[in-house]
Image (cartoon, rainbow, N blue to C red; front, side):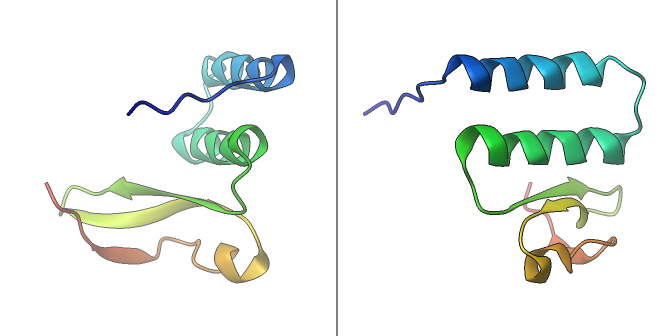
Length: 84
């Protein structure tokens, strides 16, 4: 069964804004923060964390948006080895 997400015009504008900002030469952490914030605004999640797989296979928390207790995991926390 396929689940479809219906987006409002406002949500589409927010997503287009993200695409525009991505072309602005920002660094990776800025981009990940923008994407996480947009996920909260468009989809309505309470919190979003973005992990990046490092060269050694571990995951590193690079962007967190949400309540203060969730945002405390930001700061390069390691969350274990990624599964390939």
